[in-house]
Each structure stands twice: as C-alpha cells, then as structure tokens.
Length: 178
Image (cartoon, rainbow, N blue to C red; front, top):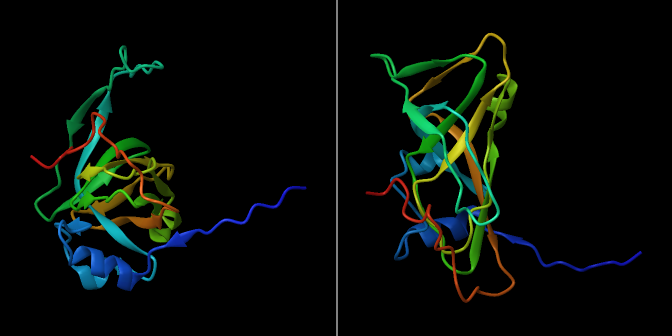
C-alpha cells in the first residue's frame, strides 16, 4: 500500500469573502451574500432554465463537437417554473472569476436532493471566468417547482498546491457575461 500525503485546502467563508472583496472579485452578481455564503462555499442561484433540444456530439479534439440547442423556458407571473421528469440546463446568476491558484467543484444543495432532483457540474478550472451552467436532472416522477433565484448548487473553492502558469481559455471562458 502506498500512502500519499495530500495538502487539500478548501476556502472557508472568510477566505471567500476576502476574495469577493478583492479585484477582480471571485464572485459577483450574487443575490444575497448573507444567505448564499456558506462555511465552505457559496450557493449559486437560478437565472435561466433551458430545455435541451436534439442530440449532441463529442469527439476527442472538439472539431466535430455539437452542443444541442437550448430552448429557454419561461417562469410564470409569480417567478415559478414547473419541471417535469427530465434533464435541463440551468444558468446561474453569479459570475465566477477563478484566479490561477483556485479551482472549484459544485455539489447540489441537499434540499434539491430531498425533492428527487440533482444538479451535475464539471470542474471549474483555474482561469475560468463566466456565468456557468449545470445539468439539472429531475428524477421525481411528480416533477419539481423552482422559483427564480433559488439556491441550487454549492460551489466549493480548492486552493492549488501552486499557481498554474496557464488557466482555462476554452470556448466557455466568458460564457453568459456579455
């Protein structure tokens, strides 16, 4: 058996707040920092929800990659939306600006899980800037209701053992910001 000693550091509420108050801010466009800031992360909130329309394609180089069309869904006059069994794209309100010494990982809020739904999120690489998206899957056969700006994902920030030389500069850098 080989033992590896890892020095994993997750940013605390105070460290996140310090970075929010720096330039550029780690997180901006939040709804209510007092409610969203958690002991070891920040809750991201629902801005828009999309239905996925069509098939996607993914290859090794992304030369033949095809992201299916996203069709926006409407909230009702009281800002609620009903989501039947299925999968959806959720765009968050918050803009994240990851410096070269941090990466982030998102996990669903437990209330979402208790309703029979979850949200999947990829790794948020150092250098990522944007208003990210997640894959919301409703497993509950009765569906769920979400209110605009509800908190669905807790984003946790991990301090890297050293700063990366080059951050994320892929197609999704700057998404949802313009």
